[in-house]
Image (cartoon, rainbow, N blue to C red; front, side):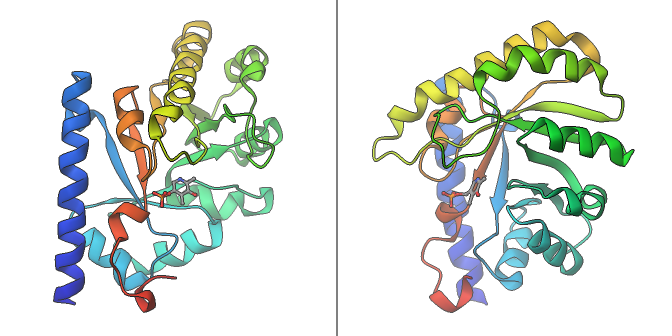
Length: 234
Ligand SMILES: *Cc1c(COP(=O)(O)O)cnc(C)c1O
């Protein structure tokens, strides 16, 4: 366990150094960016060790795995659902999460509103146009304005996107710029009804570029768990 702790501490130190440098380049403060540890590939023990290192925001992409880990990890962990939410899993997920990052259709947005509990969500945009990815198209933004004005319980905290994997993360920059402009435009049109503050963008491969372009949440898995023996992941 000491080896696990040392490895996580050292990975985290490297990530923090890179986050701080990216914030400095962009003239931003480190506390404007939340580091979400994505625990989908690791065991409860590894996730718990990450919490012990002070990473209190954790993300899972499958609702069932989020339920399972949330039941076993300390109550002060803030859970983020970052993958597709099936409508029959909404009721059980909403009470457990700090935020749902992955509202990828109008149907899902309306179903979450219908649950009748206050919850913060992010709208997932497919900015790259890849057919393998879920989410709203940038051209849907105009139609979303009226929908957002009509919501009474769901709070739209901002937008989320996944950039394609690129060997050179610079190539992801236009995607992050586009998401920021979409957020700014929606905020301008929707007004005060929703905060529309957050930009959830940036993963292990591209988080520094995302921070330079305004990310408020980066979702990191691989870079935090690099070097773990096989039996401790999955
Ligand atoms: C797995 C996952 C991540 C983390 O990806 P890494 O490249 O391992 O950092 C971030 N966001 C989403 C939506 C994911 O599914």
